[in-house]
Amino acid sequence: MDIIKVPVNQAKQGINQCFIGKEPWQIVSITASSVLLVSWFYGFIFNNDESLVERGKKKFFSLMKMVPSIKNELEKKKKEVVEAFDNDQWERTKSLSYLRNLPPKGLKNEEIIQLVEENLNLGKYDWKDGHVSGAVYYFDPDLQQLLTKVFEKTFFTNPLHSDLFPGICKIETEVVRIAASLFHGDKNACGSLTTGGTESILMACKAWRDYMRKTKGITKPEMVVPRTVHSAFDKAAQYFCIKVIYVPVDPYTYKVDLKLMERAITKNTVMLAGSAPNFPYGTMDDIEAISALGLKYKIPVHVDSCLGGFLTVFMEDAGYNLPLHDFRLPGVSSISADTHKYGYTPKGSSVVLYREKKYRHCQYTVTTDWPGGVYGSPTVNGSRAGANITTCWATLLHFGSEGYVQLTKNIIRTAKYIESELRKIEDIFIFGEPVTSVIAFGSRKFEIYRLATEMDKLGWNMNTLQFPSGVHFAVTHVHTKPGVADRFLKDVRTIVAKLMEKPEKPVEGGLALYGAAQLIPDRSVVGEFINYYIDAMYYLPDEDKQLKENGK
Ligand SMILES: *Cc1c(COP(=O)(O)O)cnc(C)c1O
Ligand SMILES: *C1O[C@H](CO)[C@@H](O)[C@H](O)[C@H]1NC(C)=O
Ligand SMILES: *[C@@H]1O[C@H](CO)[C@@H](O)[C@H](O)[C@H]1NC(C)=O
Image 1 (tube, protein in one colour):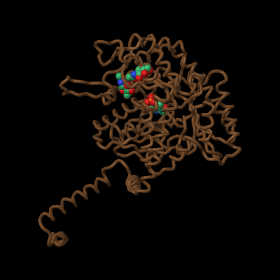
Image 2 (cartoon, rainbow, N blue to C red):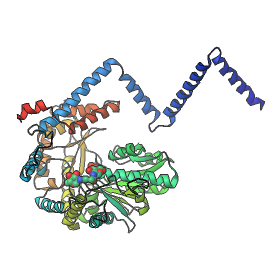
Image 3 (cartoon, rainbow, N blue to C red):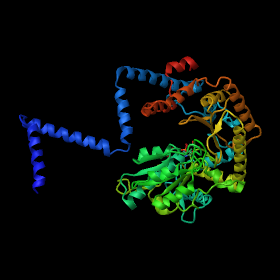
Image 4 (tube, protein in one colour):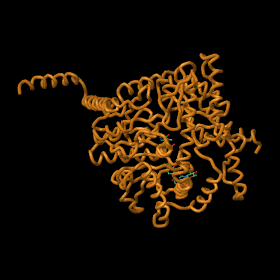
């Protein structure tokens, strides 16, 4: 006992000495502020989603931003960027004036249709002709006509009211079941139709967070995902307070590094994920190995097949081999797949699938004590558009499996052709091994964004990648038409040859900013710029500017 008493007494004396000559109010306020300081410090170190180094860096940069000269410089850059973004949208839309108020009298049908057409004609890319990477997956007037009819008959329906529209619920069930069967789910497999891949991923992340909380008591959830997963996982993490742990990909295969993935698993891990395939490189993680990790550590595994899902499931029948990536792997617990990409349905539909019903329960939201009644809904929305569910279903029925197999054949054949021809061009290289329709390439000789800029001038819209710089092209049905692939390849060859005349030249134009953004260590500045980019989607010109342009 004595051994302990001595230091306690010493501490007591030390503290008393500190407060000698202080008034009681001073003692109280010093005590209070030191408690606050210690608890802030404790929080800063322990109760946070980010590593200490990461936060230290952010703190440093946010302090730097308070230095007047740096602050001014940033403000100036910010203004330039906002103007550039707004101006882009202005240039694209300036030929039509923006409506600012309701028209006093309702418009005639023909007038409305004409307005729709005028708005649709804005935009410089000829997407029906196959000049755009991804984005528009199928275009066929016959299908369009069918869907218009279906839409007309269903646009007022809402599956939330299953008593009024049981047929819409049935149709949704059918879509989900068809998808579950394609991914080899057994009779327990189930899921939901959502309004897009992002929502499908959000739902799966919420389900796994809640499931692991319920069954394992995990209150500080973490997800372990490849660095290349879609940004929707980060969105889910932000919405649902899950910490994301990114696992790097192998620099040669561009598949997730499995050793690092295993090392990133902790007692708080609520899910693992893999992409089949991922968006940036079109490569597919080793889902079989991730599934095995999930089984070993009893952690759910989500497979993101949003992009390629409705290609991969038909590839076997189309004559291509692909590693397993669906419910045939016992560790795979959920899958997301976008019908509105290679399912060729109109925008606004995707499916999320679960191995068992008890998992889907954790996706639902139920409110038992609302004065409006006991309320439950399966996905993000309350009311949902029955028409979109029905057009999605009608599209699946329109093609049938033979139709999908044929489309898949054409797309994969075209993609493989483009890939093999690109590999022959010396001054560029392909990232990893593309498994479906996305081919990503870069260059060690010249800045690859220059190629994107030049291709853009010829009307080819490509996706740009960062860390490292690259571009990708997603082959869709519109590119399988005769001559399109060869035109694309010819343009790439010509441009590469031209760029190699002066390989050291820097990027110019809009992509220069994009490239430079990779070098900004403070990612919050980049984040802020993206906010302005999104703002520009909601761009509304000054009334004066508009008057000058259109005189209306
Ligand atoms: C497109 C995509 C998503 C998200 O889909 P949205 O429908 O755009 O919300 C998710 N994952 C991958 C791999 C994708 O390509
Ligand atoms: C439902 O939610 C999605 C976002 O997940 C949104 O895009 C959609 O417009 C919403 N509304 C309806 C009626 O489905
Ligand atoms: C329904 O589909 C239409 C047509 O694709 C789309 O414009 C709309 O946003 C969709 N609505 C929802 C709620 O997803």
